[in-house]
Amino acid sequence: MFIDTFLEIGNQHKVCEDYIVSGNEPVPYIILSDGCSTAHNSEMGSRILCHLAKQYLKYNQDEIHDLDYWKLGQWVIHNAEQTARQLGLSISCLTATLMVAYYINNEIHIMIYGDGSFITIGTHNSIDITSVEFTGNAPYYLVYLIDNVRHELYDQSKNTKSVIYHYTDGSETKDEFAYDHPLYFKIGTNVTPTVLITSDGIDSFLKGTNHLKSHEIIEPCVAFKNLKGEFLKRRLNKQMKVFMADGIGHFDDLSVGAFLKIEEM
Image (tube, rainbow, N blue to C red; front, side, top):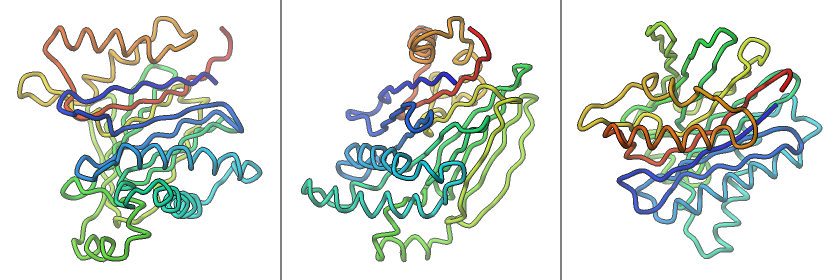
């Protein structure tokens, strides 16, 4: 299993509030977080959440084949609260999404706290995109679990979340859930050997004032020519230059992580 990541600031941002980490111990993993742009120091919060989620995988490797979604989320946010306070930061800096993905026993496990997307590329190069979105573009953040006032306000908003499936043939389906419904996906790599996770920056590409669909962006981004080393960074760095030359850019921060299963090199 090969893994790589890519991170780039949005062209309308002064500070990159996305963050992404990856590694191979105790299993291949990629973890990303997208800090809320209206929350002060959320770039710090996204980093704290990612590194604590990494620690959770390390501390719970004996149960990693089937981790508990809410146990992970609760542990991360409560320890993040302590970390933020020790750094002299308000807990509002933890207003950030979290995606935790790891590979074990021929499956990619993906847990999503807030919004974001993942992309599966099948053995016949089919590209399917699964996006998590919230009413009013207002994600349910883990920090609400430790902030009773903000949790109550969010609960009163009656927001829901949608899981939207965008298929290669252009069709879509959508499932609606309560805002706090756990989202835990398992993807078999025998059928889908390439899986990517991304922040919602993937949906922020514009050409002029025209909003580009995710498939238009993703297809050239996964046309990997060299699978050795930093295959994702290399491909996306080149593709972003092509986009720029064509007048295409992303206004939101973009973080992407890729799992690529190859039997032989």
